[in-house]
Image (cartoon, rainbow, N blue to C red):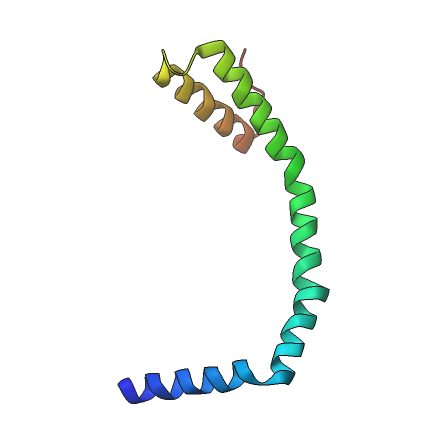
Length: 90
C-alpha cells in the first residue's frame, strides 16, 4: 500500500508542476468556476439579507438573552416555514 501511495503522490506532484496543467487550471477557474460562484453569490445575497433582517426582528421581539428557548423556537419555525413554503404565523 505505501508503494501505491508514493506513486500517486509523485504523479500528482509532477502533474501539479507542469506549466500546461497550471495554465489550464487558471483558465478553467477564470472561465467556469469564478462566473458560477459569482452568480451563486448574487442569487444568495438577497436571501441572506432577508434572513438577517428576520432574525433581527425575532431578536427584538423575544429578547434572546432572557428567553433563549423562545428565540430559538421562533428562528427554527421561520426556517421550517421557508423550506416548506408556508406563510409565517403571526
